[in-house]
Image 1 (spheres, rainbow, N blue to C red):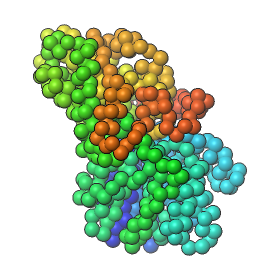
Image 2 (image 1 turned 60 degrees about the horizontal axis):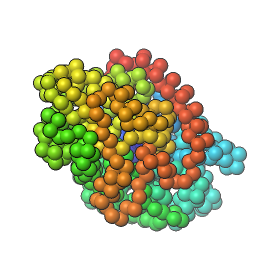
Image 3 (image 1 turned 180 degrees about the vertical axis):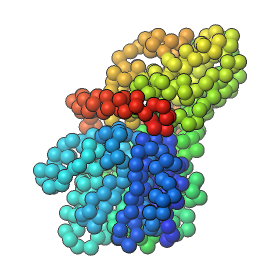
Image 4 (image 1 turned 135 degrees about the horizontal axis):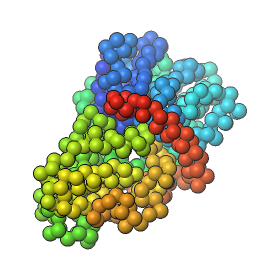
Length: 501
């Protein structure tokens, strides 16, 4: 999961890119980068850390130009603590191309071999985004063969990219002297939308980046579609996939996206309200409402679901936890030990809301169980009589290979366990999960045009159809090495929260 943005304008874009990245900060806290173009020259700054830490006044002054790209990175592939892995990525031929990517390629290793042996291209990092950039560069070069670049050439190259690349990818690329290209994988797994304000065009992962920078939301980029905006501000668009079918990642609505975003015609906030409504029915079948004194959300993504659930059950809704906003989202923190330690730094219980009460805690999802176990214990330490836990999402039982940091089955608390076994691990008095079909119906009802979702972490169905057990084993093997490195680095950085964000 990452946040990406691209801008074409008639005025300097460095501040606009910075502001958009701040609005997308929730999508990645590991690294940030911006590249701009002026007179066919690229100016780039990228580094580890959050947006406000990476970009200082001197950095912004060194980013001139009227078009550019930006990314906030949350690593799912590659070395999490290498500056080289930060995006944007750059190749000098053909034309000069820089690229930002949100997603994860499932055939990156095979492509890397192919690029070296057949296309004579060198990949210098472990990032699948660099692989994707080189595939795109090769196909543009093969299409133009030294001739001037036209929008049709760009679209022809993207068609070839779709045929070679597998997995999830929302991409924005800047081609020196020509314009900005954006395209989305044929399943539309990762979000990408388009907006405009006067002569300025913006492409971004979420609509909140458009609206928050006073751009009018135009539309979502369709699955398989390519959009090219030349430097004069003319927009060209074409469907480049053979059989596109919209299957957005359902976890975007459950947790990843900001509640004030609209993705593929679905309000994230309304989706979470709907999840609370269906979860209320599950709660009734497990714990009689008269045995619950208060409903308390676990900040922050679960608030809409918890509020809707409480209203439907006629129960008091209270804020029982105070969040320290200077600690990053624990789900996307590198390393299990850091994630566990950060929970108590991140949340503090208001004892008066727990003492002597039977509390129903509502979370958006339960992935590894570490956070849930710590929070249940916090509630008991604050004096709760009984602690019930409800998840607005179903059990996360399967690895995700499309860009969410849950690729190892052994990390998932619900993998190969019954709900009762998970309850015992978490330590709550009752555990209520959302139903998979109810989740899909609750969210899908908000846009009937969407016929399916990628819900692979819940149901084990991978929409790209190319994920095998061997792929998951290979991803897990790479993951072990990365996590060992992350754990050691995180222990060294622990005194400063922002160093491990």
